[in-house]
Picture 1 (cartoon, one colour):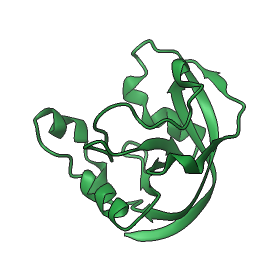
Picture 2: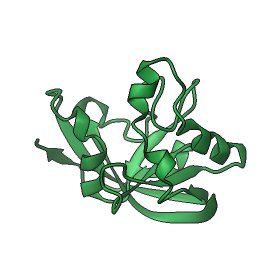
Picture 3: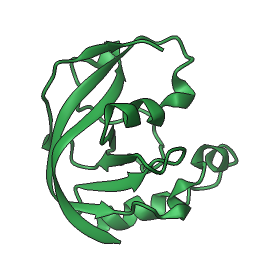
Length: 148
């Protein structure tokens, strides 16, 4: 695992109901890189990446907004290109198995990383960041409506 710092723009595609709390952690009890009550805010390095990241959920009829933010952290674990972090964790979790992707975020959290940079599963040319310390995110705006 490599480490770096990060200070730059990131994007989230959020349900309109969450616009007042753009840095709020994921509400699902488990996700690609969080479990057991862990804090995780999933963001992308591009607006396009934010759309790609939630592609499987875009048919749910929920109105969304694209939220430009800034992330500034000193310690980011970088696992870009790590193929074993690109498994479809939802299928494993549905069968009662722990996601193998959790080992990456658990290791990053263990060494004090504030975030972890990883490649998009469906578009490896795009990257995302899971933020473990949401107080390092700030809204830069403007927020824009997103249409499927």
